[in-house]
Image (tube, rainbow, N blue to C red; front, side, top):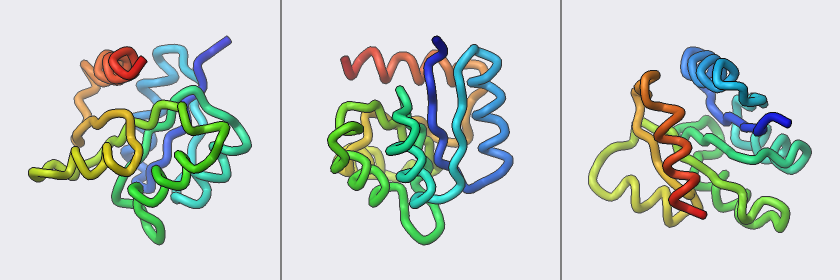
Length: 124
């Protein structure tokens, strides 16, 4: 059975690239373009991993991460922030909101999967 990954990302180009990389590496991909849709999809689909943009319209990724951590069935699901927020303190703020790890944009397609696996394995 394939590992199921939910991507919550509002930028269509970023969504396409992440989905392509994951599908090429034999992951099942679920897409959500808003925080609210991402939360609904996570509850419904129970993904193995959640990739979360922080700059989302209406509800930012910090709020999404906190809400996901409040769901009993999702409290241990790895959440990896994939974001362009790279200033001092941004990583700590993302982790404090409930993310398991952090990958900076722009994503490097050559090492994205390895970096994602490293974050998940470190969190175990």
